Image 1 (spheres, rainbow, N blue to C red):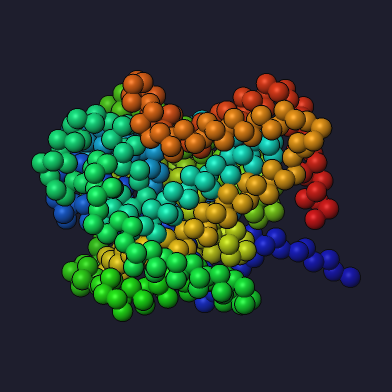
Image 2: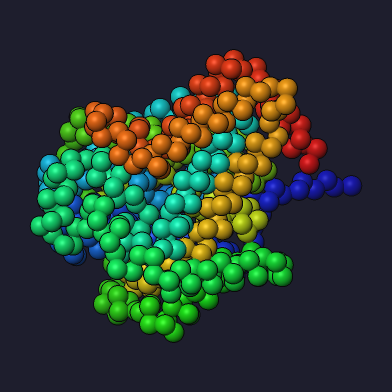
Length: 492
């Protein structure tokens, strides 16, 4: 009698057609954020349009390559082997724009890429140290962090549904960006260059922001997704977000709100070459600044990985977490070599895993391959870019809300009755995470070196929750909650 070992849903290999459709769904969700950072930094560097296009192609190519490493795994040292999509982190935007203002042009680009390479190397070295913090993340901490991740993302989804500012800051809080760098210089640059739309005014005064027809299309996409989720099962139910986005695009085209002009103008093929701007330069201060950003990124990634661990019912070991965090560093190193930027797990796609219920990491492997193709075929990339923001907005509300709901579900297993201190942990940690959301410029009087730390609501929540749990529970209450949650998972 032979024994067969059941394959965990995370390791399930789906048919190629399903993988392609589910992978494309992930790509559409993350694409807007993937191209925003090259646009912002490229224009801040005053690069030519062709050079900015090269940045975008390199970004898409590296997004796909690093996603493959993270989801598929590369030796035992790299890859968390969960359904993770990797993209450029927005935590790095402020420091990079400040560097670009100080040294514009190709020389500035080489200095930025040198800082990114240095930070990537340091991140790989310190990943095991960061992974040892896993024991400080019992359910009361992880649930709070994941809830704040979802709440923070809701602002992005709502911004998409409103129409948002055109292209440049598709998921960037521009007022926060201004607060993170020299506001006077950025404002002056924006005034002298209409192409560099940095500052709070475009966010508020966009002629299409909050347009009723845009919001109607976003609502239509949401309704389509909900109808499919309610009445369809199997494959169709799994690709409800993709179908909703396609339906929204059809309506947008019919209303004249979506066109394919960029597709016609884009090149058919483009090479992505390392060190296209020349050999990078290494400034110690810039490397240190970008390393600080990467520490923030790795702590945020820990929250994302724990969220995926809960959604996929696959517990994480410290070794696996270290491999995932080490890939953040490797991806950042690859980004610097291929003329792009620091990488992290994209929280938008965590919500998509929760919405679809498809836990296979090979879906993200397929998405990674699609991203590589988009980087090499600019016409295909331009086609995906043609999807209007407000179409994505309807899908965003579902996905990002799902992340918050996952955090709430984790908190439901926390003992609040016999340990009332847990209420303080959740209440204060969520409040700390809301500070950058409700007061984006709250840190403008503080040293600029601290801004990467102070502008991340997720990081503030993580720090507050961990410290409060140590203060109130001393590790004991949290450990009890963790044991209880583990027993519940085993029973389930």
